[in-house]
Image (cartoon, rainbow, N blue to C red; front, side, top):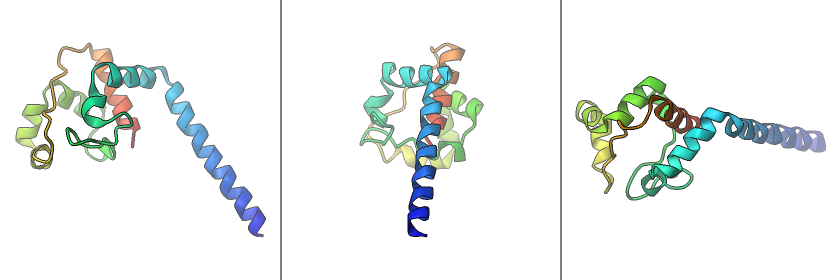
Length: 120
């Protein structure tokens, strides 16, 4: 019985790993990952989006954002920080200021937002 449970647990873990790989095979997520690196997001949020002294970890974003709301934030974070108590309090915890990305194309903004939301 213990062997069966161990085998079942191993298969479930492997299945989870496969899903993670499929996510990165998505061309939109791959573009978002590239933008995350190329646009300097890793400087403040870390290589694995684990957070640094400069900016927060990017986990549980989907609790607060959908794609369109995150794009709105990326385009003008200051405006959303001023109107959202949670974001305002969070901003005080970090040395860095979130830059505006309103100069990115709509496609790159969407890819970046979808990638960030996939990190949950």
